Image (cartoon, rainbow, N blue to C red; front, top):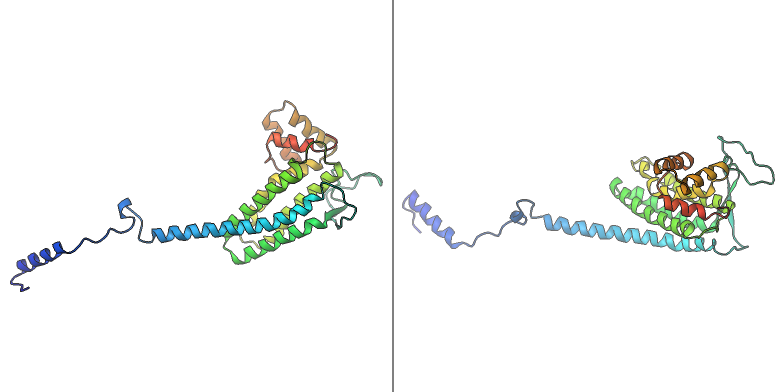
Length: 268
């Protein structure tokens, strides 16, 4: 094509453009935003979510399988059970119980704690996973995994070991043992995530309901009488919640759940 002038050249290029097919619109242009990588980002986001679900299922599945053996010990009493004894001295309370009496609430940490061997395997497994996650994942991923894993484990322990036991099934001594086990899960989390990477402050959140239930089971004397009077009486929810906070440190359980926990004791 011979170009005779600028105006003729412009006219010729315009004729050529009319013959070319239009370019496809960029992805996301029809919505007024986004980029051509939106689909790729969406696919990778879905892949990451599925991978996280697989990790949670694997970790919780292993721990829950080991916990089944531990929960079984609460049904029959086996003479062949093995315990690991840990002495925890307290510098806040004095031992006031007599030689043949069980330790009081004020001194309940001034004696040897019985940790059943059936609990050590799931706790050790849980600690190992947390340590590995902390060394290999970002703070955000670690926080998400920790929150979801511990919430599932904590709720499972709470329902199977406490809420589903039925009324009058837990003795005072067993109540203290359950409290110790609940505290052990929280302390294990603190120890495993003590590296100061910003997630330590979130450690106790998923365990609060379980630890509160364990501490309620271990209450004795005037403290237990006060909680029972407020929980089953006509006290307002605000006064009731304040009393729970003062005596056990957490108030995450609903009032009906606290009633269920209190009824599980043999002296209810």
